[in-house]
Amino acid sequence: DVADAFRKNDLQVAQESSSLLIEEQAPHDDGMHTYISAKFPLYGPNGNPYAVCGISTDITARRLAEQEKELLEAELRHAQKMDALGTLAGGIAHDFNNLLQAIFGYTELAKATLPSDHPGLTSIDMVMQAAQQARGVVNALLTFTRKDAARKAPINLGEVVRISSRLLRRIIPVT
Picture 1 (cartoon, rainbow, N blue to C red):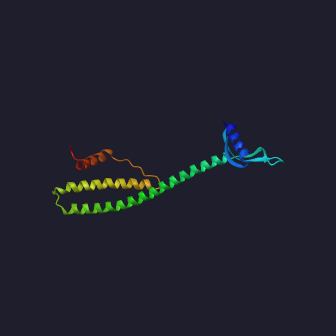
Picture 2 (spheres, rainbow, N blue to C red):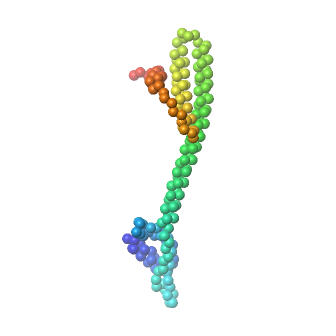
Picture 3 (cartoon, one colour):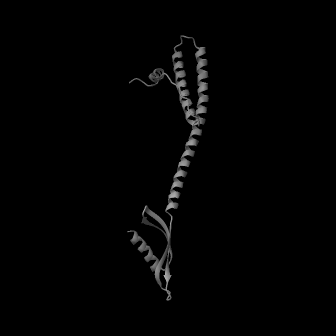
């Protein structure tokens, strides 16, 4: 197959009496190699082509280096996108944190103005718990966007489940 491809290119040069710059592949001891070949006709004293001459340069290493470069460039673009995403997420988290501060402030004010037996206090407490959970999400997002390592601390998982289930019971309708 390789010889046929080479022969076809040589015949094209001989029949058209023109030179050809082509990329060719041929087997080598360590696998297929890629060559850039310049083929041109050799003319006899009568002006007719009598042979085809070719000069080939092995560009396998160059092709591999180009592929590696493209791969590294793609990885760099991905890393830059992730960095931009982290910056965006950090900005959103800070803005959301500011909104949460307003929620905390106004729910505390509402709580302080209502009598201790008011039925709306339960709902206000649920808003506070939801805001606390949202603060946890914001903190997790901010931790993700930071370059430094996250601080790990044990949590009471039972308490998290209890608060979440109470919140979800209020939000999700019973069917």
